[in-house]
Amino acid sequence: MQVRLIDLIGVLSRALDLVSRTLGKHHAHVGCMAARIAGRMELSPVMQRDVLLAGMLHDAGAVALHINLESLGFEADIHTHARAGQLLFGNFSGLESVAAIIGEHHTSWAHLADSGMENELALAAAIVNLVDFVDVRLDRTKPYDGQFARVLEAAQREAGGKFNPDCVNVFRDMVAEPDSLSGLFAPEECLCTDAHEQLETIVLNAWEVLGLCGLFAQVIDFRSRFTATHSRGVAIVAQDLARLFNFDVDDRHAMYVAGLLHDIGKLAVPSRLLEKPGKLEEDEFLAVQDHAVVGEYILGGVPGLEKVCEWGTQHHERLDGSGYPLGRSADQLSLGSRIMQVADVFTAITEDRPYRDGMNAEQTANVLRAQVDKGALDPEVVQVLMTHLDDINETRMREQRRAKQEFEAFAEAVHHASLSEIEDNLSSVCIAGGA
Ligand SMILES: [Fe+2]
Ligand SMILES: [Fe+2]
Ligand SMILES: [Fe+2]
Image 1: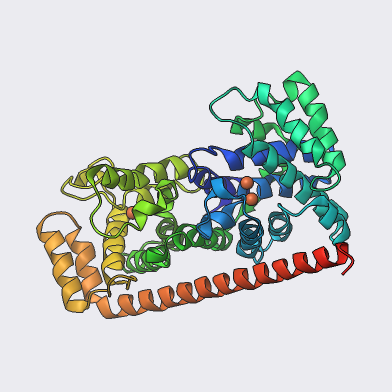
Image 2: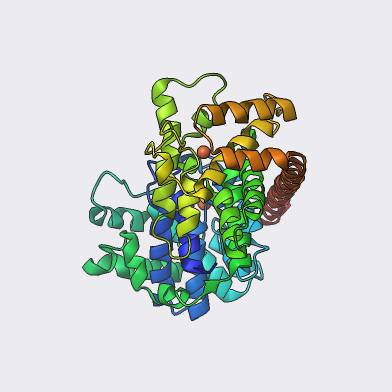
């Protein structure tokens, strides 16, 4: 399995842009505009590339921490989500600078300039900070062109303090040139930046794709405490079943990634619905069901992810046509999709959730057999699962325990990072105040 880095980051970026309706395409806008400014400021080609990626991912930490993107006005949330984003991506080889930029994307220029951070990296963070400020102030319901002058004025008032003055000047020049900003907010405009062109040559191998998608699964799963390890469980069960059906190594990897991303469309579902205790109203249920179609919008058309998209987004289809989103029938569902359907049901009923324990072996067998008798799930896949039930369940529990530990370690690290951030801010206030 091979996927271009920019395409894979584009998957998560598109998903992040569906979380908030009022801030539609925020990550695409910030990535594009930041890459343009980095080009004009003549940052090194590598840094221009990292600015684009950081812009495309910059608020991932807020989504993982369940912080409302629209309410990112509170100081504590601002620093916490920036650090959380840095922690999410910081250990991925090749994304260290991207993570560092994300970690400082709300740090004021006055603070950054004094921080000892490498100059170009500090400038990169300053660019994302300014562009983020600009984009959240644009009213999506009105034409953008008429709004830039007002936002520029607000940025100029903070030049030298919150914002790097050179970045503000470059933005001012762009606002003055009628053509330089128009069209910039169409994501395809990004495709013409030097940064994007460079990224097209970076292709990830299977292990790198698995690693990065594991991080994406954390953003998807951490958002809801009810299902904090669900995708990891589905991924390992589906991969185990694929092995038992003699899928080759490439398809087993694709199956694992499909499991990690099968619920990526849930980022577009309001979390109050995902966490609603009790039964959903009909319109709410339809909104939750949308996640399957949304998943196809996010994953569809990405070269290298064709099987991931098919298997992942068909996990709610059923052989008897009773599933969604399309109500496909048996002859339209491949073995890979049937495996994913069984892996999803199996994981959902056996995993513990905060409001109930997972089912035991006997209850699990009853539910799966009933689904087979109804004609919903594939009899052969369920049979293979039942034959290896203990082993597969053991592997699932181990994987979900590991995912839970990672979740707790992440939460702990975010907590510590934000505490030290608050201490830093307090001490700089004391120093500035001469105390
Ligand atoms: Fe942010
Ligand atoms: Fe933002
Ligand atoms: Fe789902």
